[in-house]
Picture 1 (spheres, rainbow, N blue to C red):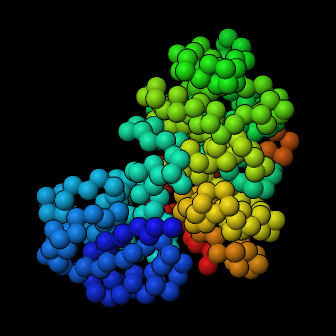
Picture 2 (cartoon, helix red, strand yellow):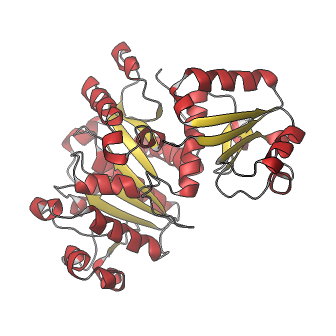
Length: 374
C-alpha cells in the first residue's frame, strides 16, 4: 500500500509535535508519509522543490494566498480552524479535537475530492455517492437511509435513493403516482448496457411527497444475487453521468455479496450504522479487520466510513471501548417505531429528525461531531 504524502503546516511547534507523536505511535503511520512545517516560508520552499503531494493541512494563518504560494495541486487542501463556528466549508476542519478524528476528517475529504475508494469510486464534479452499511442486521439501515435521503431532498438537494437489499422494502418509504415497478433495470444492465443511460429516465420513479427519485426494484432475492459488480457500477455510473443529482444514497444489504461490495466500492463515503449492542461492534470490528480481502487495502474502508450509533440510549458499556471504533454520530432510540405502521410514522419524529439534521450537516460539511471511543 502506498502511503499518502501529508504536509502539515502550523506555527504552533507544540501542536506539530503532538501530531508527529500521534502519527508515529499509531496506525496512522501506515497511512501517511508526514512532513511538518512551522513557517509559511519553509512550506513554500519545500513545495517548490517537491511539488507532488497528496494532502496539505495548514493552519488558517497560512490560508491567505495559499493557491499562489503553495501551488495548484487539486488533490486536497485542508484548513485548520480554531473556532468550530468557522468551519463553513467542506475543506475546513476544527483544529482542537482528538487527532484520530481530525485525521479521519482529512481522509474523508481527501477521498471525497479524489473519489478514490480502492481504485473503484466514481468521480463526479457534482454527484456524491453515499452508501449506508452495517455488517449486522437489524440496525435500522432502511429507516435511516430513507429519512436521510428525504431530509437531503428537503434541504433542496437533488437526491436519488437506491435500495440494494436482497429483501427490498423501497415501496414502504417511497411511492410514485405512476406506481410502476422498474422492471427492466437489470435486463438493460445485462443485455444492453450501452443503451441503459438512455432508458434510465423511463425506469426511475419520483416521490413528490419526499422529493426523492428512486428505482422501484421488486423484492426478488434470486435476481439480485445474479447481479455482477460491473452491472452495479454501470448503474451507479449512469446515475452520476446524468449530472441530475447532488447525492445518490445507497441502502446496502448486510450480507457480504456482489451488490454490497460493488456499492461500497462505488461510494465516496460510507455511513456505517451500529446498534448499541456488543454484536454490532464485534461484527464491525471483524469486517474492518478483513477489509483488505475485498478492497486490497485493510484501512481504506475504515478511512471512508462515518460511524453512527443508532438507537443510542445515552451511555456506552465499558466493553465497547476495546473495539477502537471512531464513532462520530448518534441517533436516539425511538420507542414508537417498535410498532411502526406506515412511512408517515417513520418520517415525522421531531427528536430523530433534529439529530438526523445535525448529522447530515456534519457529513455534508465534513465537520466533526460526537466523541471517539478509544
